[in-house]
Length: 213
Image 1 (spheres, rainbow, N blue to C red):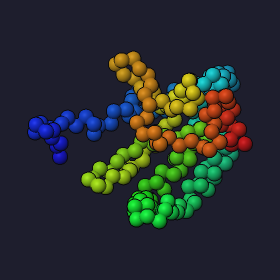
Image 2 (cartoon, rainbow, N blue to C red):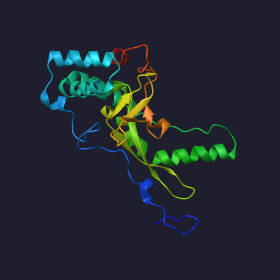
Image 3 (tube, rainbow, N blue to C red):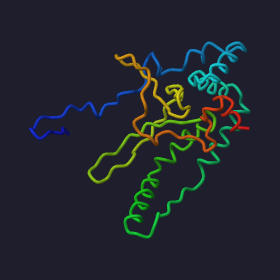
Image 4 (tube, helix red, strand yellow):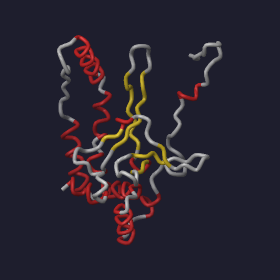
């Protein structure tokens, strides 16, 4: 259905299209990173750890994926922790006794009953191993009834951590202006463990592994 402005002219549908998704090449490859297929040797591992210590998170995220694929004990520990949390029951309580607060709680409960969050919980908990997890939110848009209808997991290697504050998550992007980074449009679309592994005073790989110990 077209949307018209005050002059009856149809508005362009560019706002409904995905602007920053996977790419065949560039900063957000649709397929695995080359290092995942070329193998890993001690020299490469040392270089990746040094890169992570200097604040470069992309190679570290790829290394995390390799460790999960090749170290079955590590994979088992991580998977157990994810499933233990993902299977916990979720309860919703109204923030107060007013009708509006009860209505808000009922709205959230009905959304949870759709199972949208539960289906994404395991991937959201990927932040346990990698420091953060990002999901793209696809909205159900209906007058007076807006809610997230789908949460799409996006690989951490598509993102970069700000060198300035060690906390802000930037989307790696290729655009005609030469910019390589853009901030996710939804502030709360990024999940981070409460241990705050993105502390700028602590190297990325040290903080994450410390949280897993």
